[in-house]
View 1: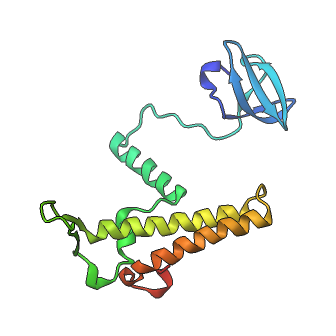
View 2: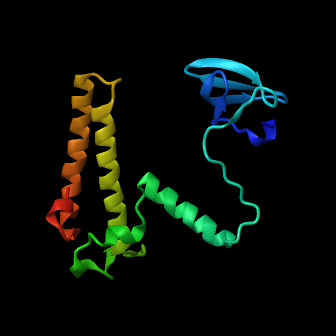
Amino acid sequence: MKTAALSIGMSVRHPSYGIGTVKAITEHSVDVAFNDMKRTVHAETSGLEPAEAQAEVSGLTLPLQTLLRQVVDATIDRLGIEKPDSSVQELAPRWRAGKLVLHPADPALATKEMEIELFFHKIVMMRNNLRVLEQKINGSENLSTADKFDWQQYITRCYGSMTTFNLLFKEKESQF
């Protein structure tokens, strides 16, 4: 296999050592981690081959913009990132197309207006990020039980502060 076809992090198969991960590439050799044992092999003569499916984009009959859109959408779905429109479904109907208006105490200062859907999206993202943080803390092997409890208390207080915004949610199950 030519070194130009290799990339760091790529999964490769060696005839003697099995499947490993490329860790470093030089002009003629490759450092590959096989079962936690790093070996240096000659890229072209060692019999290395890709251990996973490879894609070649040349001759693609799909418009590049369409391909990129499909890749980005799949990535967003895989990462669990919400699109702004998806959180709007949780917004109570009476607030849709509304505006959030902030009036400063000083009348010389301008008021701030924001679409309520945008504000609601930010609230939902905060809720979702708090849930992920809570899962990471509870699943952490590096934190002691006492530390987990302390961190959990901070999250609980954040949830308590966020209950102010429960009136925006359509369903009670989605609230803080």
